[in-house]
Amino acid sequence: MPENLNNANFFERVYAVARQIPYGRVTSYGAIAKALGAARSARMVGWAMNASHTMEDVPAHRVVNRKGLLTGKFHFDGTNLMQQLLESEGLKVVDNQIVDFENFFWDPQQEIPEFK
Image (cartoon, rainbow, N blue to C red; front, side):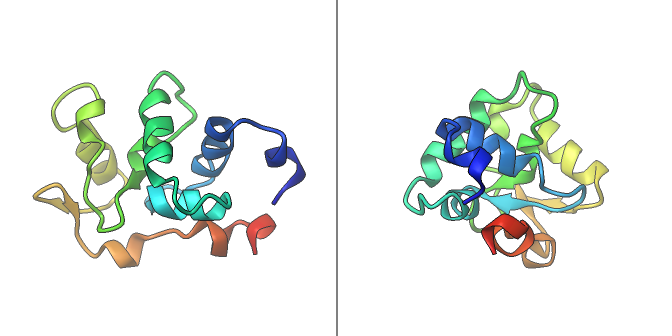
């Protein structure tokens, strides 16, 4: 694990990973938890994403559940803000689920050099 993430609290570590999710890509709560060495803490990642809404540099809308469902959408201002943000990045959402989720999935363990 990267040295600078070892000393940060869990939420800060989650935000450090989330900030690296590229535009037009998404990841899951579980993938972030697994990358941080806390595979059973997906729910905790969700709490971190919910607490991040005042931080403009944390793209919480790019974090969804393992099936591509927008389970966190109710924590965004407005009924469809999470969906609108994702669609503005080129993703298609139908019935609160990302279409072709596997094609847009970003795995932090594969993409962040420190986790490889």
